Image (tube, rainbow, N blue to C red):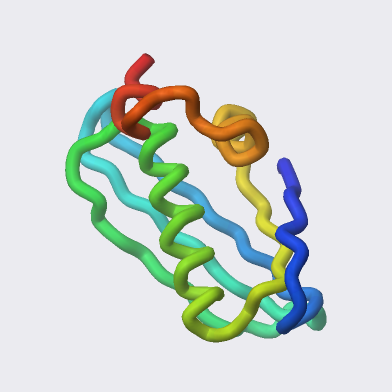
Length: 106
């Protein structure tokens, strides 16, 4: 499991877990995630159908959607757990392409 602390100021100790998958590469894709507080209590979750995309792109959509939901709930200090080294690399260094779709297909 790869971890990345997103350091801000509110909601200390929240843990975000996300995952995405596609049936084929590219293929029909879904993503999901959960938010738990520092004590492990459930704070929220989601599951979405993305449409047709690659597996790395589905992972990125899961991260984006969960971070967006955390931000909307004023949780700006979170620990993000992602099971894709490729996605962690994208988040740490940025994506050197104009489109996630193009990068994820490469």
